[in-house]
Every structure is written in structure tokens, then in C-alpha cells.
Length: 83
Image 1 (cartoon, rainbow, N blue to C red):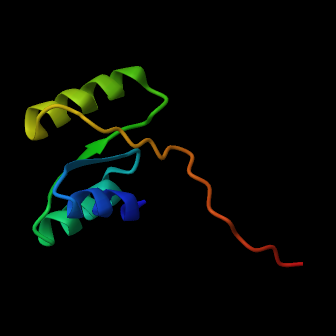
Image 2 (image 1 turned 180 degrees about the vertical axis):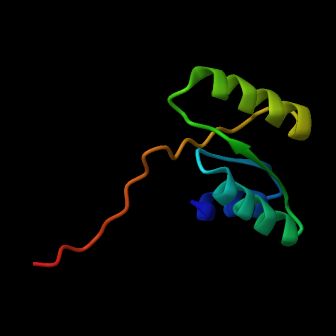
């Protein structure tokens, strides 16, 4: 999850790391801030419209207007098969 967010932060973007696992999102945001970037974490289940509204409001309040949205929900990772 963290790779794309960290790339945006390296380009001096303020990043909202949103995930249904807030602890994981907070770790990524903390890593970005520790590397002198700007980031916040948000609890977001992309299937819940109200959570989208809350996340956008938090992002705009903290970081300013949203100019880029990168939705990685359901991102696929290749795995090997034992057999």
C-alpha cells in the first residue's frame, strides 16, 4: 500500500492515507512525516459513501483541496501456488 503514497509525498504532495485498517494507514502516514513529508491517516471503507464524505472533508480541512485521487481499493498482488 505505501509505495504509491510515498511517491506522491516525495513530489511534495500532501497525502491522505486512507484505509479500512486505520493502524496501517497511520503507520504509512507516520513514515511519510518522518521523511519530512506531509501526510494524514483516515479510516475509510470505500464501500461506505458516508466515509468518503468524511475522508474528503478531513483531507480538505487538513491539506487543502483534493487535486489527485488514487484509489487502490482491491489492489491485486500476484502470489505463487504451491502444488
